[in-house]
Image (cartoon, rainbow, N blue to C red):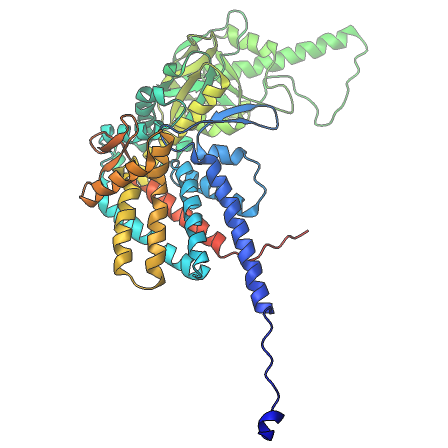
Amino acid sequence: MATAAAMPTMRPRPATGETLQERSKGKDVRISNIVAAKAVAAAVRTSLGPRGMDKLMQLPSGEVLISNDGATILSKMNVLHPAAKMLVECSQSQDIEAGDGTTSVVVLAGALLDACSGLLSKGIHPAMIASSFYKAAEQCTQLLKRAAAPVDMNDRESLVHAVQTCLSSKVVSQNSDLLAPLAVDSVLGILGPNPSEAVNVDLRDVRMVEQLGGTVDDTELVPGLVFDKGSTKTAGGPSQIENAKIALIQFCLSAPKTDMDNNVVVSDYAAMDRILRDERKYILNMCKKIKKSGANVVLIQKSILRDAYNELSLHFLAKMGILVVTDVERTDVEFVCRTLGCTPVPHVDSLSSEKLGSAEHVGDVVLPGSGHKVVKFVGVANPGRTSTVLLRGSNELVLAEANRSVHDAQCVVRSLVKQRFLIAGGGAAETEAALRLRELALETTGMDSHCFKAYADALEVIPYTLAENAGLKPIEIVTELRKEHAEGTIGAGIDVKKGCISNMYDKNVIQPLLVTTSAIKLATETVCMILKVDDLVVVA
């Protein structure tokens, strides 16, 4: 007994320790990141789908912007929280990779973060959740590829249907009958004679020229080149040229200047006359060399150091029957050369007939509805395979949104060039993936089973939001959608126009597989990255 009494009594461990404090801090930071990112997702959620709402944004410059494109809205938002910025970057990555689905990827990321909150509250470690989510994303990609239908790039009708699905959620959706074939033809035109052999497409080969006036219905695809301003001419200068030989000059048709800012003081009239006579002779000599090369259309690159042209040079060129287009931007030079087959000429002495481009007809065209003039080049050689879209709109807002919408539509065709599979839209793909993932969760054991089920629930946010934005009863619609997919109707999706479940393949509501798989992968990567952050270090 005495020995027992002499033994030191064991003190209980303190309730708080370093480890527990660290965990608590990591938990707080994680919750803060999740809340901030979910707020960004909630901001664009109402813009999803054909019945989604548009956002009116006032920029710091006072400019007003109307759009329901996720990437555009988020890029204009002033997001301060670093975790929320990751969602903005995720949307931009989707815009670069697929061009469409920029709102879907953010809404999906928000739903996955919501699922993470539930799993974390159950005590599952963030690293385990991230690992399971990556597995679930991989499974979804494989499931969707099996459910997708292959597409042939020569099947123009299928491509048009896919583009119309993309345009159905845009501000210019009522013009999709015109814009969808136009977007498809503009991309197919740069793929060459065998579009089925192409593996990628550079959309910089399609030039968008905006012209205020008229309506979106006046938009056209020009099989050549268009400059957004008329030709520069003095009295008597030509405005139409047949069988044009085109020179693109990078030298200035004006009197030379000294390299440094010097002043020449002229004291008498005889010297002044001599200067003017020499200037006239110098410019006339250059114009004669241009005429001698055989050029009857001259494109003059914009100059910032001195005048690229003056009234005297325009007068001489007009007398020689040469049409002049001035102020060609430096950034457009490469595109112009590839379209017309000409070579830019840096000095008048190097101008020769081999460096000229050709076109059947070049001339000013007055656009209906505005009175603006543009220069059109028709019947060009087009060795670089390019195309030009002339966009029209009644105001700047409509014009800018039409430009973004046509670009997104072209990106859909590019997605099909990269990965030639089409899948049903209207929430069908996400519901199918969620259903198969739930079945997989029942066969899986351990933490993966819980995480797969949470991931499947998060995927259903897309059909749920589509139904909600269309004014339908989301719970009823999603339940019916699950039932259709469980019975084996892979193409069952939400028909927002009729407010019921329909087969999306029959309704031609289809989208590229790359849009859905890319959205799932990018959303999962972003969520796992946010999940693995356990501290926020501010560097001053």
